Image (tube, rainbow, N blue to C red):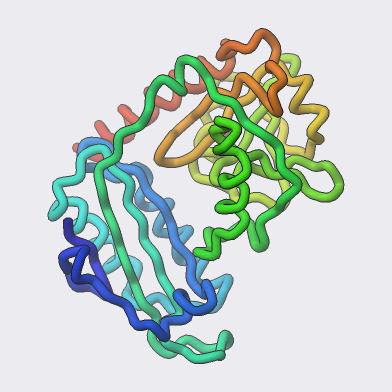
Length: 280
């Protein structure tokens, strides 16, 4: 398998970055995760915009033009013969010492690999657990994933699929690597503040509105989770994941709900339409 390091395609076993890279030493880097279907990257144009925004927010100069990053990403997908895959673009401040104000020469690493998704989660639903944790700078995918790691180290031994992060005010924010939605009284509710505004989250909101489902973006509590009619998670590689239990408590009847099924169906339709349009 090849990876792309600073514009060059190298065998993954031989790929290297400097031991003095700020991303390695300080987590001074960000990334973006994409999903491909049949070799085509879903909403690549939106990922590229988010990469530009993230770079500007934390003051990292892109190592190449955004057009070149697009070209390299597509080429790696082709080289690795990726069909249904996960693609990750990581950009660091490079070797920059203890200087976080400038960016002399940033570094780029792109990986692409085929993935297999356990589809039983879509039909059976999953268990999730709440944790009193919150990501710093949640609007950017920073490579420092300590919160996510600690969250999964807590929930995986309980056979949990996801950790739902709750702040000190008992406000639900997001999953460790997902956005969260709940359904209550035919309304689709999702967290509004201090979250990553995920691209799958945004697409779900747009699809729901197009089908006349009322969407409310607002803060809500752990108590609201327990009393929800339905809950689901969104994530680019894993799409839409129904949740049937929170902290061991069944959500409604403990089965995947009708609104969740409808959203899942509409999302699959959207993917097919997007790919078809991209082929033209």
